[in-house]
Amino acid sequence: MSWFKREKAGISTATANKKEAPDGMWNKCPTCKKPLLHLEQVENDYVCQYCGHHLRIGSKEYFSILFDNNEFTELFPNLNSGDPLEFFDSKPYPERLKESQAKTGLKDALRSGHGKMNGQDIVIACMDFSFIGGSMGSVVGEKIARSIDYCIEHKIPFMLISKSGGARMMEAAFSLMQMAKTSAKLALLAQAGLPYVCLLTDPTTGGVTASYAMLGDVNIAEPGALIGFAGPRVIKETIKKDLPKGFQTSEFVLEHGFLDFIVDRRQLKEKVATYLKLVK
Image (cartoon, rainbow, N blue to C red; front, top):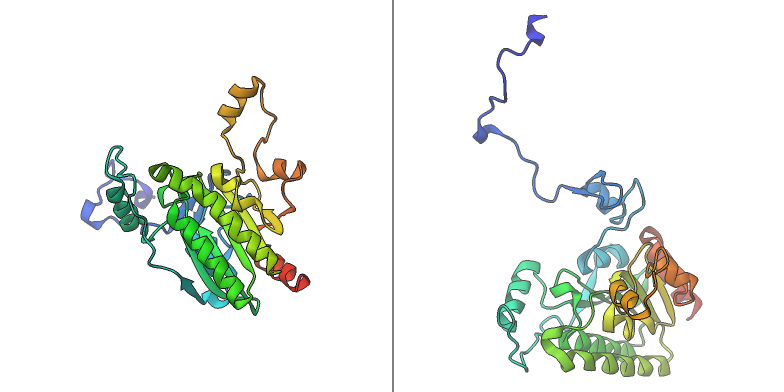
């Protein structure tokens, strides 16, 4: 059994000869901590196959799940935020925008596209948390408003996927004005008799929750998503009471009547497509 005996202690492989796994090939589930292969995540719609945890994804992944054959036309792709307040914290706001655009490959925190879902025309607007926390700025509000106008013009249903930390502080009141602007546009969509589907994902908080994220004809959410306006710490300090277990999860919000139902991401496309057929 001499072949089984280690002759040298330690690892003798030269650094140049070591094999590294490519970035992005593996991920770890934040709930069960098990390793997840990227190809398996794609096949499972970015849901952990062990515990069912819904991983955070962006507009690129949602579009690939919802649009038939991932075919769509992006709407209003070249809108950029201005700097009306000349905001400066640790760096100027325009510089922060350029850094986020270079890092994410996105123009802002929301993308909108027109395509087909199970053969039915639909416009989907999806927020990206990777772009400054999915914050709602003037571009986000303008893209939603223009997408609604596009839906009214072409008589197409509208779906909005929320994933945001709230209003963008760098735009102050300009950001908060988007709450009223988008709500008014949604009223016009309702007058036109066109369906509006809201999907709330993890996290949906702040001014987004207080405006367009909760105004759908049907409000749905993914399992375990954080949904709320103010944070739990702020609420606890205000009411001076301990908060119930599971507070601000989608299950808690559903139990208290603020959602219509919770849907597994793997069934999302079929559920939404069925709803749109029923309300035609």
